[in-house]
Amino acid sequence: MSVSKANGFHGMDVIWLLDQWAERQPDKAFLIWAPFDGAERSWTYAELARDARRFAAGLHARGVGSGDFVLMHLDNSPDFLIAWFACACLGAVPVTTNTRSVTENVNYFAEVMQPVCAVTQPSLAKLVREACGPDTPMIVSGDAGDYDAEALGAEAFADVFDDGPVPDISTDCDRNFAVQFTSGTTSRPKPTVWTNANALWGGRCMAMNLRLRREDVTLIYMPLFHANAQISLLTALWSGGTIVVHPKFSASRFWDTCAAYGVTWVSMIPFAFKALSGRSVPDHNVRTLIGLARLPEAEKEFGVQTMALWGMTETLTACIVTDADHTGPAGTMGRPSPFYEVEVRKPDGTLAGPGEEGLLFIRGERGVSLFKEYYKDPEKTKEAFDKSGALDTGDRVRIDEDGWMFFVTRDKDMLRVGGENVAALEIETAILETGLVLECAVVAQKHYMLGDVPAAFVSASETGKGLSEEDLGDRIVAHCREKLADFKVPRSVHLVDDFPRSTLDRIAKNKLRDTLPPIEAG
Image: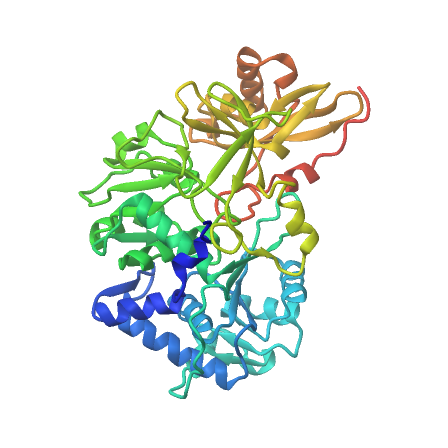
């Protein structure tokens, strides 16, 4: 008999989990807010559960109920987490959006989701009001002196807390829990719906992969509006641990914070590893830094273990992951997680084996181990899966002779140069070998004869900053000519101070492509 994975969460939801820990370890620190300026604040499990319910009571008094959407457009803060859990208390659904978005983006988010209210911060209040229109109630976190509440028709976050009743709702793992908009590097962002079962699944699987216990502490510096940070939070919640939250990533504060609070694990981004390299490392308790690949050099420098994983918003957590005791070779992202079915398919549709590469497909259960849907977009939801029901990730991976898996590229990062397939990652790897650049991104520039040609965007390293832009480009091209076939050598090199970003460390390559005019002659 086949048993649904959802049965494993029957009688559970996220608030049930928070309440469990609030009852069993009420005085244990759950949230520690460590701002760069100002005093630290902390909440025990019992205190956070209490504040979430008090804020939920205030939302309920203002008409927010089960199934309603609440737009949350704000950076990392305790108020973010209080509002997030408050929505769960009511059965309302927080829609967490990228704070780098412009007014047009937020207007699109609001048009799709039709939120009954919005929660934001002073610096973003005007943008949210313009995007959501005059009729959407708006709650603003932070100091009321930093914005004109009357002009914006806004209410202070602190004024929403209420000791009134919170309606009883059934404990339901199938109820919608949260929405994040995907990064939208190749199309408009899609509203990805997670159920409560999705949230519990993500937290439970990561806690098991990392072998976490209640004593463990994590540092969260990535934006809480993003799936990565939310899964770190849910992982700590599942295991009964503690989270330390920074406003954002800070290389100068990272290790001191880890040492001060006894941090034992951190989910990382590639840029953070680069930014931390070369800095002094104090005595610390960090056991594991989690990234996209195993990094033996970082292990030596920082005195930690690196674990690798592959996942996406639609899969919630790691589908491919290294093991704490069997870490694999440098650069690997691991092996298939026992919690998912993983397929790597060659162009003819057959399964790739050791020594081969192909497109990555994931099998799981919708609403539990895979996202529920793209909200109100059945066509896009259908397109995400093939005819057999497997999720098409759009990523290319390689399997080595021993079965370890390596990320190759996004399928959309494949250039077609004069009929030849070229992976942007191969060119980027060669450019990074020069030591002249900190980051780089290779994109396709349209060409009248060849279809695509590679164009490179780079930010200079300390060594590269000593060169003129022309010399820097010449050296990069010369190195690529030595390392790559001629059709893979960048036709142009563009120096940038900063890259456009979608979310986290992901460079928005579509925006770089848009800056390149087509080559129409010569």
